[in-house]
Length: 267
Image 1 (cartoon, rainbow, N blue to C red):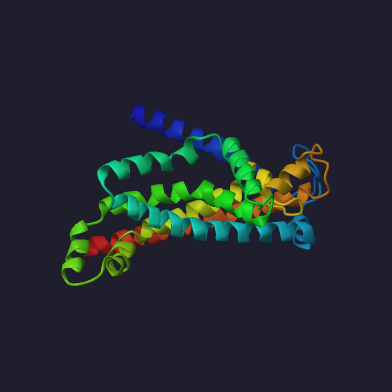
Image 2 (spheres, helix red, strand yellow):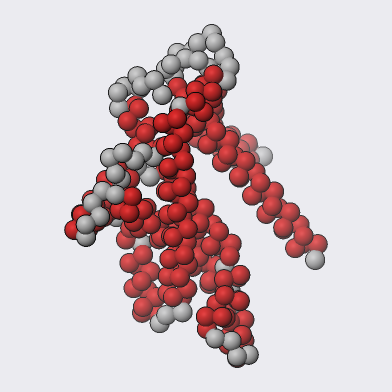
């Protein structure tokens, strides 16, 4: 009994330390104070109105979402193809490619950013949207591979062999059997790639055009002046919206998974 109380108290404390700052930021999104830490007697939705009326900030949000979707889609295609190729390769090739795939994850992100910027400059891209997209794809592809590989290992490989025995080509067998079997891993990799792209600052700052802004670079520029930028209060509303969207996704995903588990259990 004592162990359960201590364990429950410890988990509660950890969760409180993790989410208390985010919840405080959510509360501050309804307060008219220009600085966090100083309460204003005025409360309301003015910061949300300022967010939607700030064309520069809204353009930044759209830029970030479009970039994340593009990088997520390309990374998912390349990562899925790479994971399938690695899985069906020889053991030596599989092991070598698996270790090479981990390098962008283990390597310092600033090193990756500078390397991509140098290569893009050598090939004439410079700091353009192409170099920015390449940088985000290089960053996110390994995470897609790591999401897909476990699903390939869980798959019943006899199904793939059976389809080949029935006369299907390897390509057709992959689309008929392998892709549907690993689809949860592909979706997880796609969502993870989007999340990483949305959050990235270092690679973005080294590869983006000077006139292009993402949420991460916009926030840094706004707070670089000591948090005195006029757009800083509206950013609290933006962060609150992002937080609510993430919570909604977690709740919906948990509901779908629990319902799926109940249906499978009833069978």
